[in-house]
Length: 549
Image 1 (tube, one colour):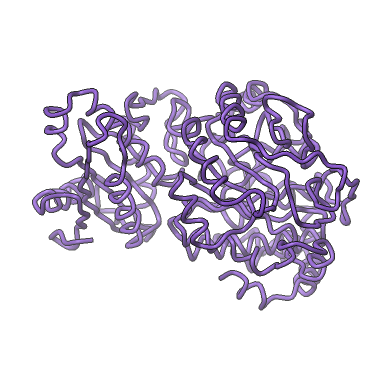
Image 2: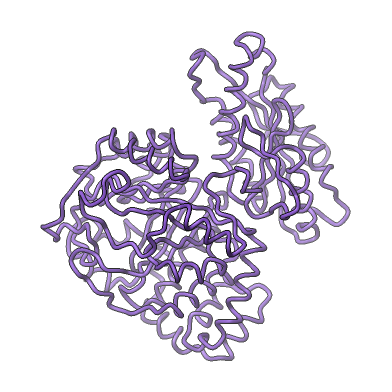
């Protein structure tokens, strides 16, 4: 658990180390071909302020190389502002007696989701205050099930749960978990949280671990800048993200560094974080953690967001409301904080496009070409209309490009070849409409099982291919999870329909002599072994033969 790592560090000592770093330390960090967390204090230091332009150029290049030009758009949906914690800085705090409290009914939640869908948003972040006695896990699970009808991706930002609690929400359809630590400074944390369950800092620190153990596909962590020494808080948030990425390889990790802003209660930041400092922090994090996602919310002003959107952001909120019911009836209940960027989704999308970026409101649509590795502006992407995945031709362009970039690096690439078992029998017995429903559902299962930077396509007929980077033997976990997910899909019509699939896996670190076609060929041979063993299983290619995963 991360709390065990965190307890080995002294917040004040880290703060002093950051301040003590000099220009020589900064230059050594920037000169490193593979900078690590050990280099981060120098890049967060006051001395690094003189190097921000160089850091920004490097951050821009890394972001474009790793994530392309895509910016994933999302919107928060507050379903309750009930809270039993006494956080001194939050508009939802129980100490704010004048707050109009509201918990949305399930019908109201559905209306809010319809409003978001009409705006073009399909990535939804469901939020609550922290009042489990009034907003329990069952209520959150029901909200998630409704959101599943309107959203391609659902994340939650709710009070910390047990592993079992998170498991129930994953089963309901949750993809990601966001937990802000607020501040990693134990002394300041205790002062800012005088009462309530949130006062237990260790329980909160380990919530992302529990989420990962429950099977969350994505984790988001961060600090609320302005509650303590911001430079040290950014360091600890990066340490937290680095720990999660190393310990839960199959999980996509994102960071966010929101600055505290005015809320009910008139709490003012204890530490001022300037625009220049924010840019320094963002670019330092991108240099040290090149594969981490970076979220920027509408807390920040429109002008500032326009100025930083190219530098490191991968996910940005748009058209946001921070009050329960705010998308259908504004001003009825209290908002958590004031919005800085009030532009609509369309207006913000136009701003992104003007910078040469691509706003993505739905995974795997015509604007998103495989997350990290993208088609060029002169290439026309092809998306399979039934499954929402790339078609074979677009996949080959991207996959071969990715394969070539990995040659000789020692980094792993895995190919998962998937075939639906007895698909012809489904069409023969239930008709082609039922067969189409199977393809559509399995396409959705594949999308929810891979990371944004992975590639997936409908290869032809009832065959699919996924290309996954960086996992090595851990890719078997993804394959096993996917085959179980396919096995448990429920179909509306006919309800008796039950479908399984077989998967063949080929994993390796490609050398200069390897070709991508050989990986496809070996994955296909492993798939044949799975099919020969009556299907509903995973086989992997090892050496010159296939074996059980």
